[in-house]
Image 1 (tube, rainbow, N blue to C red):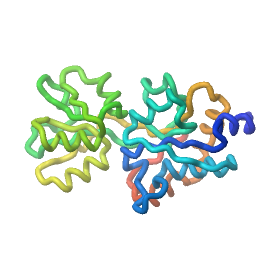
Image 2 (spheres, rainbow, N blue to C red):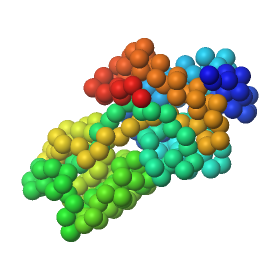
Image 3 (cartoon, rainbow, N blue to C red):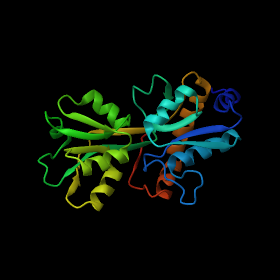
Image 4 (spheres, rainbow, N blue to C red):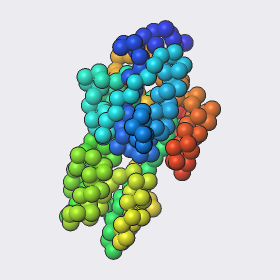
Length: 243
């Protein structure tokens, strides 16, 4: 049984819950048009977690998932919402995923590449955001193509449009939005990975991790995650199965 008092202590070393949010993933987080706290499923989960703990929440936002993950080394947040990856798990204890999103490629309409496997060929250049979940995955899996990294996913898409690159890797939804606004481009129907969006705490906070893991499972089962996705305009995103 989780020690709730100890979990609360581990979640709030500053007296409130510091929630790390990756603003570079529009499926998980969106900016408030009025300049307030972030919106989206990640922020909704953080608010509900803080409510249950009986504490205030303070959001710490990052432009990219890589910066969010790196910030754990300086203990800048107490809970974060980002994709599971072995490279990140050295410093972060993750829950099971609460959302599954697809990593795929956008290419020119005339490109001969039809499936993700077609992209892993000598001479192919793939734009990708630095230290994103799909950058970490492709770094391990790509054998022949060259990854061309930009500082963020948004910058990678811009680089793909402006330079002679063959593909850009990313989350399906923003890639499809970019293709829709740029005639002559398409997104592959097949994905190269399922990105497991989860929550995590800094290593060494075992009571907080146990509490968070149970919390995420309850939020999936209760319909909270599905509602938060709908409320933020992401109803086409899949809630992850029980962990």
